[in-house]
Amino acid sequence: MIGYIKGTIEGILPDSILLENNGIGYRILTSGMVLGHIEGIHQETMLFTYLYVREDEMTLFGFPTTEELDTFKLLLGVNGIGPKAALAILSVLSVRDLSLAIMAEDTKAITKANGIGTKGANRVIMELKDKLSIDDYLTTESGYENDGVSATNAVSHNGMEDAVLALVSLGYSEFEAMKAIKQIPDAEQMESEVLLKQALKKMF
Image (tube, rainbow, N blue to C red; front, side):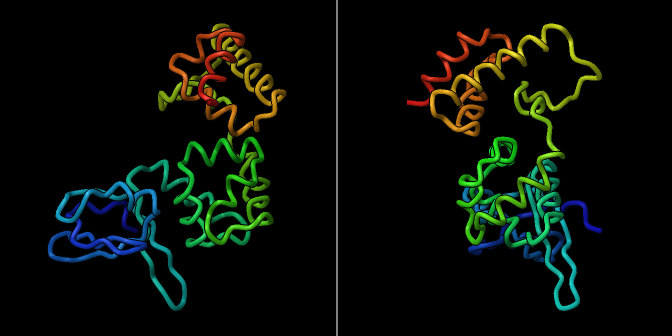
Protein backbone atom coordinates (compact mmCIF):
# COMPACT_ATOMS: atom_id res chain seq x y z
CA MET A 1 0.00 0.00 0.00
CA ILE A 2 1.39 3.40 -1.01
CA GLY A 3 0.88 5.91 1.81
CA TYR A 4 2.03 9.00 -0.04
CA ILE A 5 4.14 10.07 -3.00
CA LYS A 6 6.42 13.10 -2.98
CA GLY A 7 7.74 14.33 -6.28
CA THR A 8 7.60 16.90 -9.06
CA ILE A 9 4.50 17.67 -11.10
CA GLU A 10 5.36 16.99 -14.73
CA GLY A 11 1.90 17.10 -16.25
CA ILE A 12 -1.60 18.38 -15.50
CA LEU A 13 -4.59 16.58 -17.01
CA PRO A 14 -8.32 17.42 -16.68
CA ASP A 15 -8.78 14.92 -13.83
CA SER A 16 -5.26 14.10 -12.67
CA ILE A 17 -1.59 14.99 -12.47
CA LEU A 18 1.60 13.24 -13.51
CA LEU A 19 3.88 13.15 -10.49
CA GLU A 20 7.49 12.08 -11.07
CA ASN A 21 9.35 10.30 -8.30
CA ASN A 22 12.76 8.72 -8.89
CA GLY A 23 12.24 8.56 -12.63
CA ILE A 24 8.77 7.05 -12.44
CA GLY A 25 5.74 9.11 -13.49
CA TYR A 26 2.62 8.33 -11.46
CA ARG A 27 -0.76 9.35 -12.85
CA ILE A 28 -2.74 10.37 -9.79
CA LEU A 29 -6.41 11.28 -9.99
CA THR A 30 -7.46 14.10 -7.70
CA SER A 31 -10.28 16.59 -7.18
CA GLY A 32 -10.95 19.67 -9.27
CA MET A 33 -10.41 21.77 -6.16
CA VAL A 34 -6.87 20.42 -5.82
CA LEU A 35 -6.17 20.84 -9.54
CA GLY A 36 -7.37 24.43 -9.36
CA HIS A 37 -4.71 25.28 -6.78
CA ILE A 38 -1.79 23.91 -8.78
CA GLU A 39 0.26 26.82 -10.08
CA GLY A 40 2.02 24.89 -12.84
CA ILE A 41 4.37 22.06 -13.71
CA HIS A 42 7.79 21.42 -12.18
CA GLN A 43 6.61 22.31 -8.69
CA GLU A 44 7.25 19.82 -5.91
CA THR A 45 4.31 18.41 -4.01
CA MET A 46 3.27 15.50 -1.81
CA LEU A 47 -0.01 13.64 -2.07
CA PHE A 48 -1.48 11.10 0.34
CA THR A 49 -2.70 8.27 -1.83
CA TYR A 50 -5.39 5.62 -2.10
CA LEU A 51 -5.04 2.68 -4.50
CA TYR A 52 -8.39 1.65 -5.94
CA VAL A 53 -8.28 -1.93 -7.21
CA ARG A 54 -10.82 -3.75 -9.36
CA GLU A 55 -10.53 -6.78 -11.60
CA ASP A 56 -10.00 -4.63 -14.68
CA GLU A 57 -8.22 -1.58 -13.26
CA MET A 58 -5.86 -0.15 -10.67
CA THR A 59 -6.22 3.59 -10.10
CA LEU A 60 -4.24 5.85 -7.80
CA PHE A 61 -6.02 8.75 -6.10
CA GLY A 62 -4.21 11.50 -4.22
CA PHE A 63 -4.95 14.35 -1.82
CA PRO A 64 -2.76 17.01 -0.15
CA THR A 65 -4.08 16.30 3.37
CA THR A 66 -5.02 13.20 5.32
CA GLU A 67 -8.34 14.90 6.14
CA GLU A 68 -9.29 14.94 2.46
CA LEU A 69 -8.12 11.37 1.99
CA ASP A 70 -10.16 10.17 4.98
CA THR A 71 -13.24 11.99 3.67
CA PHE A 72 -12.73 10.36 0.26
CA LYS A 73 -12.65 6.96 1.95
CA LEU A 74 -15.82 7.78 3.90
CA LEU A 75 -17.59 8.70 0.68
CA LEU A 76 -16.50 5.41 -0.92
CA GLY A 77 -18.27 3.62 1.91
CA VAL A 78 -21.60 5.16 0.92
CA ASN A 79 -23.83 2.83 -1.10
CA GLY A 80 -23.74 3.84 -4.77
CA ILE A 81 -20.84 6.29 -4.43
CA GLY A 82 -17.78 5.24 -6.40
CA PRO A 83 -14.40 6.98 -6.67
CA LYS A 84 -15.47 9.27 -9.54
CA ALA A 85 -18.57 10.41 -7.64
CA ALA A 86 -16.52 10.94 -4.47
CA LEU A 87 -14.05 13.08 -6.43
CA ALA A 88 -16.91 15.03 -7.98
CA ILE A 89 -18.22 15.90 -4.51
CA LEU A 90 -14.79 16.96 -3.26
CA SER A 91 -14.37 19.04 -6.41
CA VAL A 92 -17.22 21.38 -5.43
CA LEU A 93 -17.16 21.17 -1.61
CA SER A 94 -14.23 21.39 0.76
CA VAL A 95 -14.08 18.81 3.55
CA ARG A 96 -15.44 21.39 5.98
CA ASP A 97 -18.28 22.51 3.70
CA LEU A 98 -19.25 18.92 2.93
CA SER A 99 -19.38 18.14 6.64
CA LEU A 100 -21.57 21.17 7.27
CA ALA A 101 -23.86 20.21 4.40
CA ILE A 102 -24.21 16.68 5.78
CA MET A 103 -25.01 17.89 9.30
CA ALA A 104 -27.47 20.47 7.95
CA GLU A 105 -29.02 17.85 5.61
CA ASP A 106 -28.48 20.27 2.74
CA THR A 107 -28.97 18.09 -0.35
CA LYS A 108 -28.76 21.11 -2.69
CA ALA A 109 -25.16 21.76 -1.71
CA ILE A 110 -24.17 18.15 -2.43
CA THR A 111 -26.07 17.91 -5.71
CA LYS A 112 -23.85 20.65 -7.11
CA ALA A 113 -21.38 17.81 -7.75
CA ASN A 114 -21.45 16.46 -11.28
CA GLY A 115 -23.45 13.23 -11.47
CA ILE A 116 -24.87 13.45 -7.94
CA GLY A 117 -28.65 13.59 -7.80
CA THR A 118 -31.00 14.07 -4.88
CA LYS A 119 -31.10 10.36 -4.08
CA GLY A 120 -27.31 10.14 -4.03
CA ALA A 121 -27.05 13.25 -1.84
CA ASN A 122 -29.61 11.82 0.58
CA ARG A 123 -27.60 8.59 0.83
CA VAL A 124 -24.45 10.55 1.62
CA ILE A 125 -26.30 12.43 4.37
CA MET A 126 -28.03 9.37 5.84
CA GLU A 127 -24.94 7.16 5.89
CA LEU A 128 -22.39 9.74 7.05
CA LYS A 129 -24.32 11.99 9.42
CA ASP A 130 -23.85 9.65 12.40
CA LYS A 131 -20.11 9.57 11.74
CA LEU A 132 -19.77 13.34 12.24
CA SER A 133 -20.08 15.49 15.34
CA ILE A 134 -21.41 19.04 15.22
CA ASP A 135 -18.94 19.99 17.97
CA ASP A 136 -16.10 19.18 15.57
CA TYR A 137 -17.26 21.96 13.26
CA LEU A 138 -18.67 24.56 15.60
CA THR A 139 -15.46 24.78 17.63
CA THR A 140 -12.14 26.21 16.52
CA GLU A 141 -10.07 24.21 14.04
CA SER A 142 -7.29 23.29 16.44
CA GLY A 143 -6.88 19.77 15.12
CA TYR A 144 -7.09 18.33 18.65
CA GLU A 145 -9.92 16.75 20.51
CA ASN A 146 -10.53 17.41 24.21
CA ASP A 147 -11.15 14.55 26.58
CA GLY A 148 -13.89 16.59 28.21
CA VAL A 149 -15.86 19.78 27.69
CA SER A 150 -15.22 22.67 30.02
CA ALA A 151 -17.99 24.94 31.28
CA THR A 152 -16.66 27.77 29.10
CA ASN A 153 -16.77 25.61 26.00
CA ALA A 154 -20.26 24.41 26.83
CA VAL A 155 -21.46 28.01 26.97
CA SER A 156 -19.76 28.88 23.69
CA HIS A 157 -21.26 25.81 22.00
CA ASN A 158 -24.71 26.85 23.17
CA GLY A 159 -24.15 30.41 21.94
CA MET A 160 -23.11 29.20 18.51
CA GLU A 161 -25.98 26.75 18.29
CA ASP A 162 -28.44 29.48 19.36
CA ALA A 163 -27.07 31.74 16.63
CA VAL A 164 -27.53 28.96 14.07
CA LEU A 165 -31.15 28.47 15.16
CA ALA A 166 -31.77 32.22 14.96
CA LEU A 167 -30.40 32.41 11.42
CA VAL A 168 -32.51 29.44 10.37
CA SER A 169 -35.59 31.16 11.77
CA LEU A 170 -34.74 34.12 9.52
CA GLY A 171 -34.90 31.89 6.46
CA TYR A 172 -31.29 30.80 6.00
CA SER A 173 -30.37 27.14 5.70
CA GLU A 174 -28.37 25.47 8.48
CA PHE A 175 -25.52 25.06 6.00
CA GLU A 176 -25.45 28.82 5.27
CA ALA A 177 -25.73 29.66 8.97
CA MET A 178 -22.91 27.39 10.13
CA LYS A 179 -20.67 28.45 7.24
CA ALA A 180 -21.14 32.14 8.14
CA ILE A 181 -20.41 31.52 11.81
CA LYS A 182 -17.23 29.60 10.98
CA GLN A 183 -15.93 32.72 9.20
CA ILE A 184 -16.13 34.81 12.39
CA PRO A 185 -12.87 35.03 14.38
CA ASP A 186 -13.22 33.93 18.03
CA ALA A 187 -16.84 32.92 17.45
CA GLU A 188 -16.69 30.41 20.28
CA GLN A 189 -16.05 33.28 22.74
CA MET A 190 -19.07 35.37 21.69
CA GLU A 191 -22.56 35.48 23.11
CA SER A 192 -25.32 34.45 20.73
CA GLU A 193 -26.65 38.00 20.14
CA VAL A 194 -23.25 39.39 19.19
CA LEU A 195 -22.53 36.34 17.09
CA LEU A 196 -25.85 36.68 15.27
CA LYS A 197 -25.09 40.29 14.31
CA GLN A 198 -21.65 39.34 13.03
CA ALA A 199 -23.03 36.36 11.10
CA LEU A 200 -25.71 38.50 9.41
CA LYS A 201 -22.94 40.76 8.07
CA LYS A 202 -21.41 37.69 6.41
CA MET A 203 -24.69 36.99 4.65
CA PHE A 204 -24.59 40.18 2.58
